[in-house]
Length: 478
Image 1: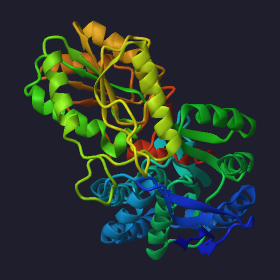
Image 2: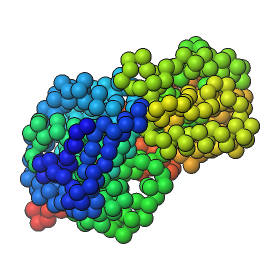
Image 3: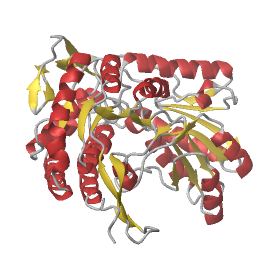
Image 4: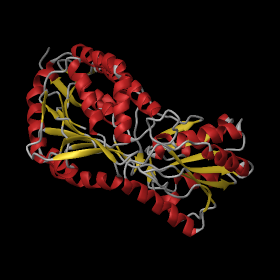
C-alpha cells in the first residue's frame, strides 16, 4: 500500500495536518492506498498557488493554452490502461467502464481547447457616429471544483477542461473515496506542460475545504457535483460572498416506453445494461420505468431474464458486469429504500437484498407494483434497483415522469416521430435521451432543471461558464 501526495503549485506535498486517509477498494473493503487528510489550511495554500499562476496563464493565447490541453489529451490516451485499473480499484466499477471513462477524457480537453479559440467577441452598432462598442470575454479567475466519486475522471475533467481552456486556474477537491484518479489526471496535465499552480489537487475533509473556497474572494466560482442537500448549503454559503456556482446535483430519471418500440426484448436487455452502469451509481441513470400496458408484462419478463444474467463481482474480474456499491453506508441506504418500498406493497421480481461476503455488493433488483408513494419512485436510489410500472396514455406517462423535484435526465423510446417530438418537449428535464441511453458528450451541454442544479458543463455553454463578459465603449472617434 502506497502513500500519494497532494499537488499544489506543481509540487507533490503532504497536508499540514499530518493526517492520512485510507483509500478502500469497495470490492474487498481493504485499503489500497493512503492520501493526505487536509483541511482549510491546505485549501488556502492551493488558492495561493492558483492565484499566483493565474495572471500568466490568462495572458497566454487560447492557442497556447489549447496546445497544452491537446498534449495532455495524447498523454491520457496513452495511459488509459494503467489509469483505468487504479480507478477500478478505488471506485469498484468494472474495468471496461473505467477504460471508457479515461478513453473519453481526451475528447473534453480537445473540444474545450477548440472552443476557447472561438471566443472572439463582437462589435455592437452604436447609435452615435463617434462611438464604438465591443463585447469581449475574459477568464473568470481562480475556480474551485468539488466532485463526486462515481465518475472520478469525468466529473473533474468536464469542469477543468473548460476552465483551463478559458484561461482560469483551478483548485480541485476530489471525493475522498476516489482521490487517486484526480491525482493521475493532474499529473498527466503537468507532464503535458501545464505551468505550476494552474491546476491543484487537495485531498481532505469536504466541509472545511468547501467553506474555505467559498469564503476566499480569490475563488470566483465553485463547481460542485454531489447531492441536492449539499448543493443547497453551498447556495446559502455563496450568498455571503456572491461566489458564482455551477451545481450538478441529484437525478431521478424516468423512462417512458411506448407500445410501438421495434424490439421489446432487446430494449429491455439494453435498459438493464444502462441501469446497472457503475452499479446504478450514475446521476443520469435510467431509474423509473413506465411501460405501456400492452407490452408491460413482456418487458418485465425480459428485464428479469437480463438481470438474472448479470455477473456481480469485483471490477477487475473480466467476467463482472455489475460491481460493488462505493461503501457500506451506500449499500445500507439502498437496502433501506428497497425494504420500505416492499413494505409499501412493491413486489421483488428479482433480487431485493444485499449480497453476503467481503465488499459492498447488492443484488441487482427488479420491483413491480410499487404504489405511487413508495420510496423507490421518489428517492434517488443510486444502486442497481429498477422499479417498473404500466401506463395507459401519454398524458399519464408525462404526469408520472414530471412528478419529481429532480430534472436532470429523462428517456423515451418510440418509433413515432410525433410522439418523440411531443413528449420530449413536455418532459421537464435538462437532457432527454430519445431512443438513446447515453445523452452525454463533450460537444453538448450537461445540466438539469429544477433541483438538479444550476449552470452547464461541457459544450460551448460549458466554456462560457468560465468567462466574464466585458463591454467597452469608445467615444470621441469623430
